[in-house]
Length: 101
Image 1 (cartoon, rainbow, N blue to C red):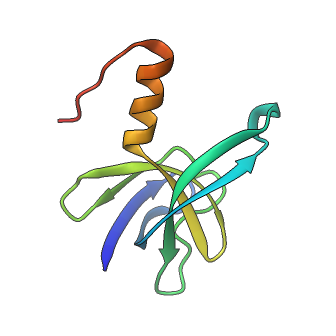
Image 2 (cartoon, rainbow, N blue to C red):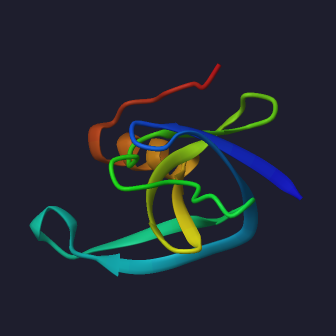
Image 3 (tube, one colour):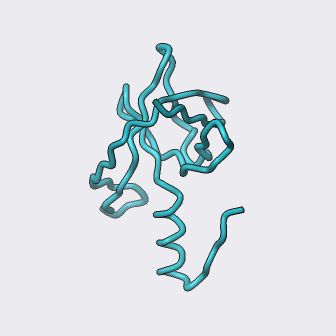
């Protein structure tokens, strides 16, 4: 079992369990329909992993390794966009390379 953490604007520091499953779904954020691929996170201890206002928070593991960015939720599950997908998209769109240190 892999635990992940997030420090959000609304819920502050929370802990969840990474479920080894990627989901792809469509959303209509920012006025247009977009396809989103996200990693599934489960809440634990009866506390939600995230709340409204937490979107954009960094999600990391016990070693401080960045997993991705918190996207949203559909209780009891939460979604994070994996950091490698974000970096790949930035590289494709803007021809910019990043190295995580």
